[in-house]
Length: 171
Length: 185
Image (tube, rainbow over all chains, first blue to last red):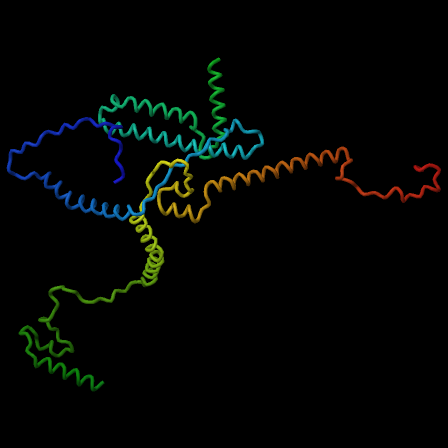
């Protein structure tokens, strides 16, 4: 199985299952069912997985995350320097993708927290909810309605509009 | 015809000789076919074979057969290959880039088939990037040259002392000025 998530990151509350205190001689159907499930489903699947892993471990492949160098921004390019504009545009696209993934990660955290806490999530996950709200508000203000043909240039113009609006409000 | 009637009468006579049920009246014996109630079909086992008249489904079945054949012709090898790759080679695991090592462009992908395609069929993304930048540079130079050419045309037309827009005229040395008092007469 791929490595399970880091258990210390999202600590679960201590279990409160009571100690088994059997007072009848009748067999426990839940126990029988779990054993049946274990021998009929769990064990074959696990052995198959182990066999496949032992075959796979002979040719192990690795992959890396690519690191990109920072290039000058759209604001630092000359008027007719289209090559510089292209590089800035590509960098903006990569940053757009990264920001989308950041929003997804924060959303996953909030969902995990809500799943963990159950009905009292509004109180216990306030930090995650607050973080999610902040991140999505920033994302919306920066990349919000750019649409499918979003580009670095359009994003820059949106930022200009934002700054103009802020300045108009300041007056 | 006569032989047929003789045979028929012989058959009826032979049938008469066999023991009949008490229920059969003499009138039935005279007909050609003697209804044998003792051999009627009471239990419906396999049933009587019927010749059902319906339109031909040969073309539909042929289409489905051919569809199945052509889909499976490449479908089964692809399924075998993909299953084999997933079982025996397996996906790559994420690792940190070691110090001073520049990974090849296919080592940034997880699935082995994607890696293979990236290694053998595609150019590296760096090369694609450079190709795009070269195309942009060429187009930029073309656009700049066109702009300068427009500018030069404008200047050449205006001042007229450049090599362009020259209209060839006669050679002034060919004019015979001997009968003239002054050259402009």
